[in-house]
Image (tube, rainbow, N blue to C red; front, side, top):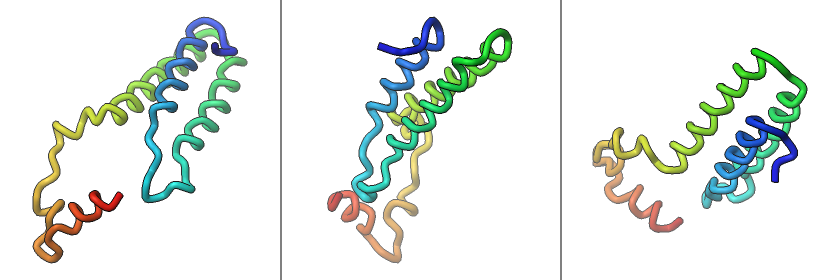
Length: 105
């Protein structure tokens, strides 16, 4: 349950849900982007709880876009649209490097 009311509470819940799905970085387990997102979210929503009127509506629009962007990242929405070429994933100078790296994670 969110400590914020109305639309702000709905957005807080959606933001919290998106952050909870954020994966742990296997290469950098001590550096948590999830923790950074939670910290920023807390500051952002505490600040927004003091704002009213048109400025609040504008800020809520920004938050909605941030949540949509997080959800797109989590769903790998753009990965299929923007394929990485084989020249990048399997360079001639070091064949199989990235494949081996991903397998080791």
